[in-house]
Each structure stands twice: as C-alpha cells, then as structure tokens.
Image (cartoon, rainbow, N blue to C red):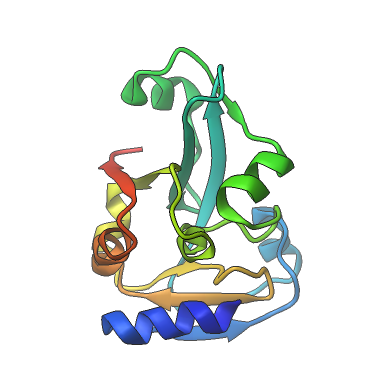
Length: 160
C-alpha cells in the first residue's frame, strides 16, 4: 500500500524521503525505539461527532496536545469522540496504528473531513505513515494542500 502513496507523490511531483522502522502503533512507540528523524512527525486522530454524521481526521505535530474542547468549538460540534476501529476501516480502509492524512488514497471517495494544524504548512519536513506503520514518509508541509486538492476531499487548515 505504501507504493501507492509513492506513486501519487511522483504523479503530483512531490519530493519525499521514506524511512523504514519497527511498527509504531502510538506516538509513545517512537520514544520506545528512540527513533531519530530529520523532520517533524505528525500524529493523527480519527474522530466523529455524537450522531456519527461527520468524521474528522485531525493531523498535527506529534508534540502538540490535542484539546478536544477547543477543537469542538472550532468545528462547531457539541461533542467529539474517537471513532471506532470499524468506522476507521469503513471510512478510510485502514486499521488503527497506520492512521494518517495519507489514507486518503485508500478509497475512491470519502466523506471524512481532514483538519490539519496550519503550522504543518510551514514545516520543511513533515512525516506521516504511508498506509502502514513500519514506514514514515517525509515531505515539505507546503504540499499538504496539493495532496488534499488532488483527492478532492473536504479539508480545513486551523490553528490547533
């Protein structure tokens, strides 16, 4: 599946670097293996609203804390919670541990709303899993919007 990500990066014209590593299921796993990367790793949260009418994939720097109350306010939602493993597979055709903004290539069309911390746009090397948790792909954050537009998904850049 990561080859599919490499192919659309090449098609769009985005330069990238790939690093293979032991499986990383959570942000804490990076510390466990004491991995050092030349770039900023990103964490991704798959959330839904109370009545399951909207699903969100939130992407932010790994060292930033997610404030769900603030996020609910910015998204005009009364309640947000983590979506289930089943929802994740249904919406993005991926299992937990490999959730990433790069999952957008796993379905023909998704109604997931991609929320990206706007600071990522100004980082020279942002790192995301390319649909598996044994690799991390790094590229210039200024291309995040190009990726989202390429896949014609709904997205917002906000200050998280």
